[in-house]
Length: 419
Image (cartoon, rainbow, N blue to C red):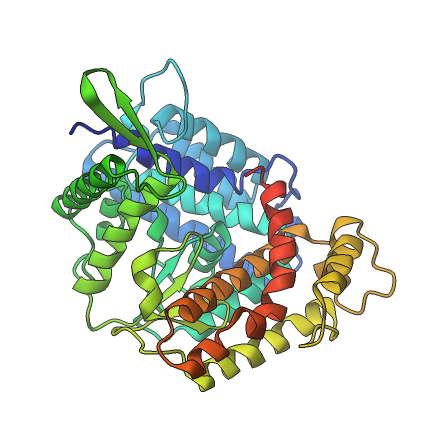
């Protein structure tokens, strides 16, 4: 079976970035940043990434292309319009984004490009909304993860804000930051190895090829049996060649590589911020604030204590944002009316939450996305529960009040990013 895997990797990388690549954003420069801690952290992050890119250029002997130097100069100044414009042009030139009719210039790839991507991502996320919530989101996740752990950041916020706000991504201080969504990119794997060396085990090129092969063989069997998963794209080309593409297929390969990373780093704790569910993780996951803890062994059940802690966390989390009105007796009709009035019409009369949150579509959509991911875990647990107590604790009815508002806003988020 002959497959076209390169197209899979390009589709997923482009999709992840396009979700954040909205044309209408707040203009960010150093003068517009209100919080001095945010400014200092972003400047430190830019300096670290620039040093990393220069070291990579010196190592590979290719030097630093002029466009890279201009990009880093703009980043040092906090010049978001130039950062954004150059990023997209460089990505088209190096093949990271579609650019029909042109051949990729590989001098624009490698670790230098990954450093550029992460600078762009950090600025992009702070451009998306109120820096108050960018800081709150990042601090919440970072403070919850023990030093020395491995963290998978899936969404643009979960990846880029945490990457920018840890003391040092390069030094893994206080923990290792990766994204599960780009593991099938050989350039990204090399980038991780250049940062973390032998501190943790990163999938090798052979691992990558084996995962592609394993997924290909699996999808070939399921294709013949008419058992493809929703979203898997398989085409039979002339000569009985089979082409695999699409985000679901790409994440299928990423899932296998994430499992290898998990299995090879047995002394490390793992934490996951999810953008796309990876099925093998479900038995190992438990809610951990905004994100998940990925336990070393499968959990026989989610205990009452875990569920209660999650309940209390989200009660305290959302009350200052939307007001203290959502409770166990709140109906879907009431939630839908609230979403329509506050988030759709931007009518904040009688709104008892934080107006800065109510006006910021990006951040209320982001927090709702995190909550919906946790609701999906409860749904999976309820379906696979062994004990009656877990079936009750994880039932859709029990957890619905936490998920309903998130689902309403999540629908708006999908419209917002054009998915």
